[in-house]
Every structure is written in structure tokens, then in C-alpha cells.
Image (tube, rainbow, N blue to C red; front, side):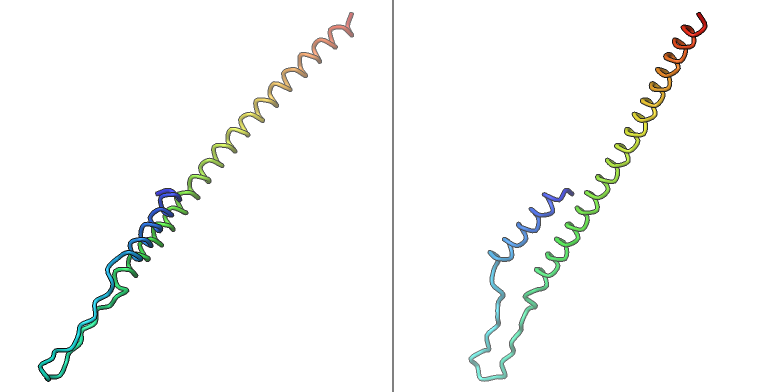
Length: 107
């Protein structure tokens, strides 16, 4: 999951929580008996949704970090290869110059 997708997931979850149904509260009976009120835990689903969103964000950050790590490795290898190639070409050019100057000295 990419960072943009993780942020989108958080936004969708936040909107769902804001627009979701209100928690229900049981009312006592009118029969005169002892009233029993049952309350549901209003934050159970929302809490799990937020945990899931946090995990999604964490995974997105890890994925991004791994992508940067792999890109940096590839860049480092390309720079090393280019540097070695440039050094070889410089050495080759210096050798040609040396050969040319040593030929003219012997004449």
C-alpha cells in the first residue's frame, strides 16, 4: 500500500465514523419492574478501524522506506559503475598520451 492509499484509507474511515449511526441506548421498561439498561460499547468497531488504519499507515511507511532503500542501492551501484568506467577511460587516455609523448621523445 502506498502512502497516498494509506491516507485515503484514514480519510474514508474518519468519514465513516463521522457519518455512521449513533450508538443506541436502551431505555427502561414502563412495567414498573427493575429496568435493565444495556449499553453497547460504542467505540469497539471504531477503535478497531483506527487500529487497522494505523497498521495500514505503518505498512505504507515501511513500503516507502523499502522503495527508497532499493532506489538508493541501485543509484549507488550505477554511480560506482560510472565512476569505475570514467576512471578506466581516464587511465586509457593517459596511457595514449604517454605513448604519444614517449614516441615523440625517442625521435
